[in-house]
Image (cartoon, rainbow, N blue to C red; front, side, top):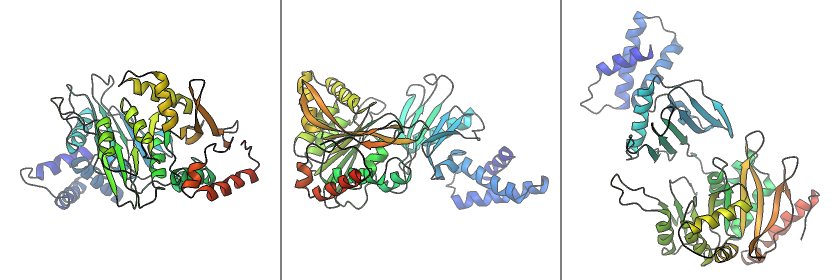
Length: 410
């Protein structure tokens, strides 16, 4: 019935002229009335057909409902028959699917063209962004063996906050207060975790703790950060090379440009390669309070990853790289997934310098056997707490941890 209605609507439309949403809806309703004279339709069927055909012709077909559902955070399309969604950190199979491969390809081309990207067999892997900021990755055959795939990581309509993450049990209110103190005291922070662990979400939440009178420069491969109430904000985004392989602007260039723009802090969405050295230099040259993220399996593993990324761009002694890390980064926060699939803050460690030619990690919070984040020790370096007026708040918070009988080592 849906295909019949769509066919009749398309026959009525004049595609040589611009068609407004209102006109399209009117034609759909008119054709539904005609079809209902031939085939008995319930009111609920008419409403469903109206929406489905409108979405198929003007929006992203079956994906539109998922894009408008705030509880859905990620959409994964594996060929036209298989759609999976993420809700509250857990994956579910979606019962609906595209009518055929052709319809999936139409939607993929609609997404790509809307982002001024070209996707075809010669260029089968494309990153793009929807109008609402949602991040899209497209992979076409023959690279994707079982059919075209598209992954959409939705952009939150409201700014992410630490309170929002607490409500979803990523961590406790006390941990949220601790993270806020770190940001306010301008500790340089690196957030680590695997794909989909919530790194960007936490970065968003922590960034919204930054005082509103600072000059902030954000650097991302695809703009996702949503900072609220900061007037002096500069947002920079990478640009991929065009079809001729020209005009690329990479993360390394953006960090260099940001350093010349008098930032109070630099927020880098994700460090993936040789730009890691530029990020360390930024943290080491008076831009305290900078935050970045990277892929790793633990705080310790993040250090190894940064080391490897720096070596991708420059032939530099490992000891020198480790020295840069030890002086640039104050705290590493690691995110992961719990046994039930939900996102959790798994570990917080402080970098305390060098020991035996290695970067010294001092665990502050770790997961215990009951899957609870437990305090292990206090911050060793508390100078920034005093310098930026956060010492009293920190001491009060430590007392609350002690009152809960959590082990504290000083």
